[in-house]
Image (cartoon, rainbow, N blue to C red; front, side, top):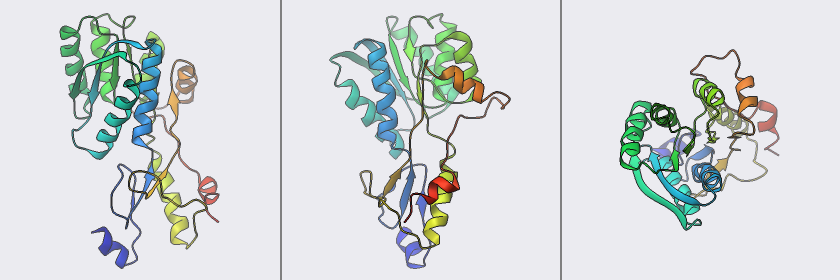
Length: 238
C-alpha cells in the first residue's frame, strides 16, 4: 500500500505509531523514550526500591510494545525495584480502574504503578477509593479533568505527554515536503530509520500547577498538548 502511494506521488506520514515501510515517514514522539522518562521518575521517586506493577495498553500494538521495552530497560537498572505484575487494559479508563482495584487486593504492599495514558485516571480512582494516595506513587495522564484532581489531591505523579497536537505538527511538516523543501536533518530516527521525533513534554509535581493554570477554562476532556507551529516547522527545512 505504501509503495503504491509513493509510486503515485502521494506523501504518507504516520503520527500514531511508527511504520516499517521506507515509503512512509513517521512524525511523532519516541514511544520508548516516552515510557523511559516516567519509569525513571517512578524509580527515583521510590528511591530505587519497592514492588510495582505496570498497566499497559493493547498487547501487540507497536506503540505499546515500544513503551513496554522503554520502562523495562529503565527498571532493570534498579535491582531493588520488582515488577510484580504486568497487565493489559487496552487503553480504556474503566479497564484501568478495574485492573488497579484487583491489583490493590492482590498486592497490599504495592509502592508504585506505571500506567499509560487515560488508564491512569481509572487507576488513580481505585487508589483513591482504597485510601492509598499517600502510600503509592503512580504515573498520570494529561486530560484537564485528571490534572485538576491531581492538583486538588497532591498526587505523587508524573506524566509524559503524547501531544494530540502531533497531527498539526505532521501537517506543517507535510506542507513543506509537498513544496519540495529538504529537511536540514533527514528523518532517519527510530528502529526503521524513517522517523522524525518530536519533543515530549513532561508533567510532575514541579510544574503540574502551572499546567493546570494553562488549562483553565478548557473542558474536562481537553488534553495538555504541544505542536510545531508553521514557523517552527519551516525552520526544520533548508
